[in-house]
Length: 307
Ligand SMILES: NCc1[nH]cc(CCC(=O)O)c1CC(=O)O
Image (cartoon, rainbow, N blue to C red; front, side, top):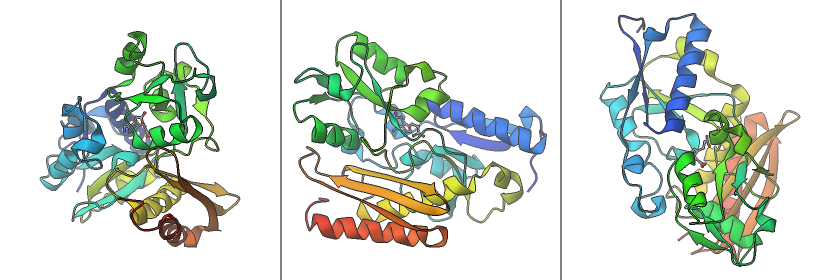
């Protein structure tokens, strides 16, 4: 299959400002890698349940897959040819016939503390209200600051800042990667990963395609091998623990010299219990190590912890 202005490659994406920025980045990289004109690529916006439902926590309306289901259906229907994802929103088990093939170089993996008045989590006054819909971030904050109160906080960066200004919360957390890609890096106030382990695959854009279509020639130049290895290991870790988004889980793999170092944790939603550890293996064993790490944390947590 060849793509040209006469038959453009259809790039599917959600319509949120962050998703659009990511789709445009993918198109720009494809154009540069192949010296092709902009109109050889068509960006197709697909509405997803996660975008449509703004008034309820994601964990309540079904967790993982809410931002990707409709896009994956469009891939299978051939309405689009590739899908651009924030990999942390991609369910662990893909629909039959689809494959996650390409990982862009990873952006900053950290979470950012966002507040108009306070400099860090530790600076928040006793009993402060934090706007946060992520069960991972809530549990991690509660572990350090059991006094904090949480309110649901969804929407894009601008919406959330407006909510802070309206006094609905004193602080919120957002992924650094999103802030960078939206062109608002000045808002960044990173929390180091030692203090707060990011979500599996945070900061990593990936491309999904039909498994039976060979797009290697087109997509391989966009792939970053180190990111692909680390994110595949993190997803193998997550696969052993949970696919539902209802358990607070953090995971981050990084290359240290030429070995893969994985840090992982599972928490009770109120932060009262945490199981966390670190594992290291050579690149060839990284994915199997990560799966074993997931099984180990599950054993340590005992039956019932993940329910
Ligand atoms: N769940 C929404 C989502 N999915 C990916 C990102 C950030 C970008 C990334 O991690 O690649 C965000 C926003 C956020 O967590 O602040």
